[in-house]
Image (tube, rainbow, N blue to C red; front, side):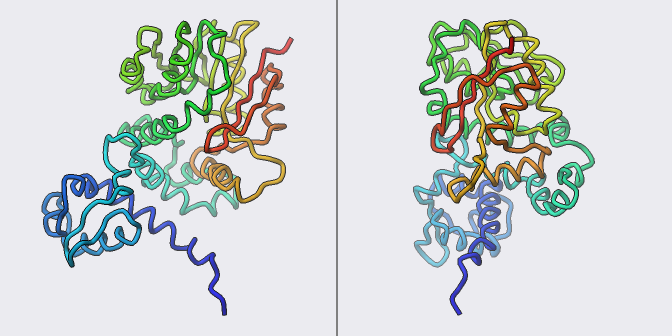
Length: 337
């Protein structure tokens, strides 16, 4: 009987958690300083040497470390992508996607399928964002993961979108400021504001200053379900609406409709689901389920976005995409007459 390729998928979650724990316990960072034995790594990280050896062997099969002697390991070039604080590091992606909240929510995906409800709320008794507000160390994991993804995709997303036509831009849910920094670099005379919850903007001022745009940028903390800064020429949202169900998404959009200038624009960057999907849409469809189990949100089709925007008082003016390696779509809308 031929071996089914589906068997490999059943083992994938183990590999993700192996990489997560290796980064979270700083084993990777220690190996970045030079080759180590399991005993030395265990001493430096407060872990159990025989178990560390077993983990290192598994990491070697993933190409993250290289075993040079029976108990001596060195970090590979690929493994360097998991280091702390280095350009291109994906450490925070694993720290977020394999965190206790995300991990347990995926484990309870059956609850969401049976009820349509959010697995995170079922397990924790509160919403994911309320939990993050009370646990800044967990919020830092999300901010790091989103900052990493934004750094990878920002240039590709705004390519072909002329931000020089705007005097002021508000990045709603802009988090660490990475996306706004890229926008302002592309438009040297444009000013901007990062707007997000207090735990979301903790690094924004530093990010904007480091990008050389701090003199044209402000950081404002608030609740976008209640209001957004008023009077900007353009409001930008990247991967915000997919966090929420239609009711909450409409509250955000209606708040922007009240704040935007009559001739202003709303620019949305999201994964847009086609009416008929294929293997190339795997990441977007996994993200759709991730939003379901974590926040109750969803990815949407173009028609679904068009309908949401119309209910909020906007007219969808243009659709551009796919953009960048992750295949995002840019949707531009104007206030309806």
